[in-house]
Length: 206
Image (tube, rainbow, N blue to C red; front, top):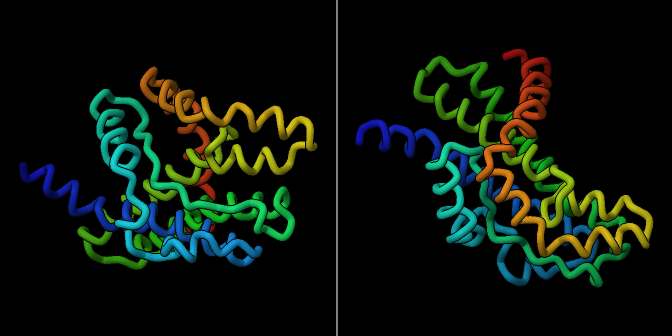
């Protein structure tokens, strides 16, 4: 019981911040490019309750953690009205990239805290912050719709190819979930995780 309480105490704040700022960043950048949908629905907020999805944020991560695969989950997607964007195809690239970029910036912040901290409790929280943010970043950059990497790829592909690729979106989460259950997601993502973590170490000097 003590271990469970300790794990929750260490991971709760970093995880909630990682999810909340990731989703709010999508809405903020969408507003920058002309779409105010997320703002009108109150999704550009630091209130984690606005972004938590019961299945994706709680149930699926618990299942993937219990079976020993790469922990996988998702927050409630921020709604984006592409027709309201000034240049929908181009602007969606930036809207999609905003989430992973926010996680990278947060990972840098946690790494700086880890470097200057002289508290073992803060060190543990900072390490959790780095892990969650780097993990969310590399997961979301997979080129599979509806993940952010898939939306970036759809925006970069020429029109006809982008349209054909976008038709795969209804199957994307099943593909990622299947990879996680089959314990194939970890081997794909861990090398990318190590690359990003090495970049953080070089950048911050931890």
